[in-house]
Length: 173
Image (cartoon, rainbow, N blue to C red):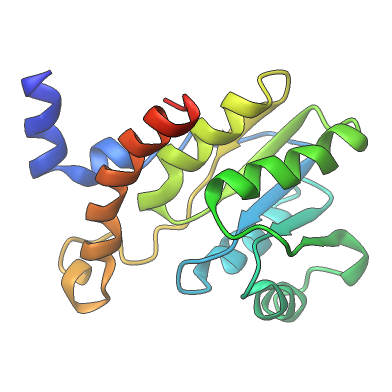
């Protein structure tokens, strides 16, 4: 346990970033709201690589901006679905999984910020173990030199509070 704490402290990006690697294909790409709008760009990039035929954006607040970013990146409007009620990662999963189940989705690629990817993946997997989830995060501000300058340091460190909080509150680990 002490070793994990040391690695997490000195190399947080190795602990909280989960990238499951190249995905041949999936039924849908799910882009979580938040970040610095880099998530929509990553989702569009994966869409153009034919990873999935459509994108669901989940999250209130920046859903309109991210939809516009997807459209400007060449994703057709018919390929974009928006879930605009959720305000937390837990709600992202709760509300989006209802859509996935209704549409009989079997696999999905989650797109979020690198520092949020472990908790996001764990949350979706926890609530829908029958669906195969992959994580392909955005690497915006992944370089350690950018953490303080771009405000990522605070967001990244907050994940170390939110990870155990999700385990305690929702049983997500």
